[in-house]
Image (cartoon, rainbow, N blue to C red):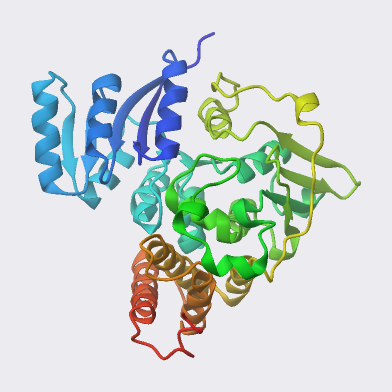
Length: 405
């Protein structure tokens, strides 16, 4: 019996996750049809994707880009309708004909359309971790209220999902889970002498040893903030207390995460470091479909290594745990300050070691408050970004700015 066709909206189709998603879709044309694609700045690539996959809709943010893309598509005899603006992202995420939404817009910019998909009861393939990091309580409430199906795309959370009991209900401990172990490669600076880290360049920071990712997430991996955000994400996704979530350095990136049970069993998901594997798992779930990833050759790999993370070398991981303990406003500020800090670092306006200093300064300067609406999230986010930008431009004293160089 053939599987019913899934109609997809891909939020962020020109990023690394979006491109990998379309690669998996192309390998399984009898299962998937693309209804909508969205992009922010890579309009040429979006045009090529529209020509190949013929979506009903394409969404960009700027009206000028929309006009140019629409003209090019008409000239190519492609009947894709072009929309623009944030509201259009929410529209294509909630289209009645769409069954599945890949949420792959990087940063808090993806929060509203991802929430729209969850509120509409879609199968949400969550690659935008900020939706959970900044609005985890709101997002999970929307999932429960609408009956949406939430499948994680981060390789670590997808691995945990695969290692947990399929029909679990209630607290993890009732399923015999003792702890979740999130693996981390350690990034490109795991063994770099600490004295040299102040001179790290953007080119070095984006050169991940195992994964092919976008620039922002590559820097997050280099600082281990990516893992800190994943700890917060795992807390909301799986209902795990922070004490149940541990991080272990695994340089080979072959074991993507593990779940330990009260009887001493540890279940792990392994595979080559290729995002098409978790994407294919979520697209096909509960079936297994071809992903295009190479199969794992354990004999060739030879050995797997593990070590504890160095919280002195990687203070961003500690900052994430601290923010989760402090409450939702601190978590929102952590994410906002990190986005600003990474952008400033990539533009060479601050140094690599300034990233955690700036984040700590902003989080410590953000008062606790209740977060009950998306407007609350966006308000704290905006305030934290303003504080971070002020620190970067010298608007705060060196002490208040955490000793920014």
